[in-house]
Image (cartoon, rainbow, N blue to C red):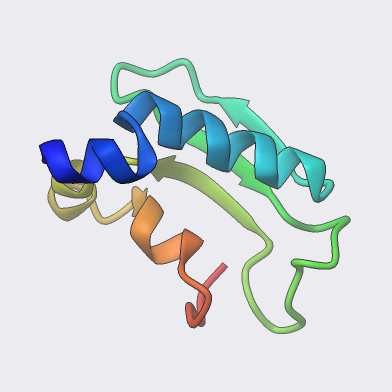
Length: 87
């Protein structure tokens, strides 16, 4: 974990980086204001929208354990990966 923090910063740093990056690309990113600290990400009006794929992630998280426990929550690893097929 320490090596990861040295490379990309803390989990909060990564969360901020991803959020700011998505917003700079035109995505709407909103806190769901739930206990799990999930985000709602809307790709609809951006170049990131892929025809035939979901364009809104209702509950996104940076906690992979949380995503494993709840099928309605999508882990950041899944939606930040370049080769991801699902948005």
